Image 1 (cartoon, helix red, strand yellow):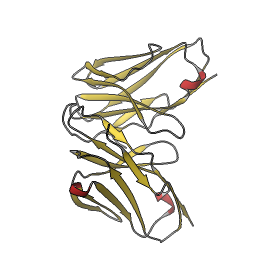
Image 2: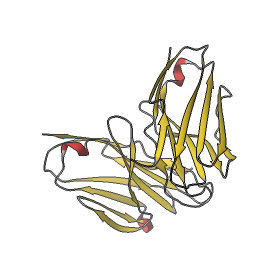
Image 3: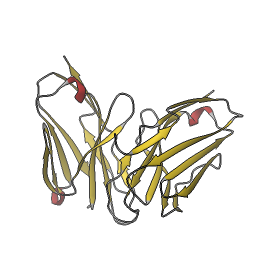
Image 4: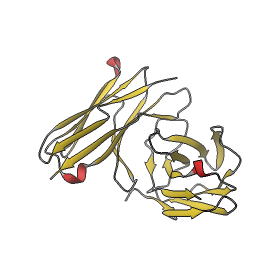
Length: 114
Length: 109
């Protein structure tokens, strides 16, 4: 148990669906992250939020839309995805972004786009 | 940008064996973390070790920052040690973790 939870753990969606991934951290951290992990590839950072403000967007397609209503919650809204978006989506948190703090990860959502 | 290389890419051992995993990085870093990803995808922090040596039970890690490498030691391996071990480093220019490709460890009973 890392203090970071994600739901759902598994998701299968069609290319025309709209779904959302949820992340919650119970660590009192101020920074939250979305990563994508595809088979045979290193983890790719997608988005960073620090004190609820988006500070990084690593050229992620607009079909992925993050939302951070407060420092404890992070969402990733998905719409009109492509089969190549199938991957493990990991949420992480750290004390802050902009300093070298440890990141703690949730269990991930395994997404399959059909 | 900074490069992170892990070796070996795959490692198969019998239960009880010891192992050493290596992480080389191409530039100075101010953060280095080792993670274990279990077969279900959960990433667990093992060590936050930008320099020096740390130990936690059967696991220990050493980072020699001046020579740009880190080592993860696993002693008396157990089947639950199986999974992928990642090294990730961070530079203060953008505070983003740069990940290695991982070492896949299989411990056979």
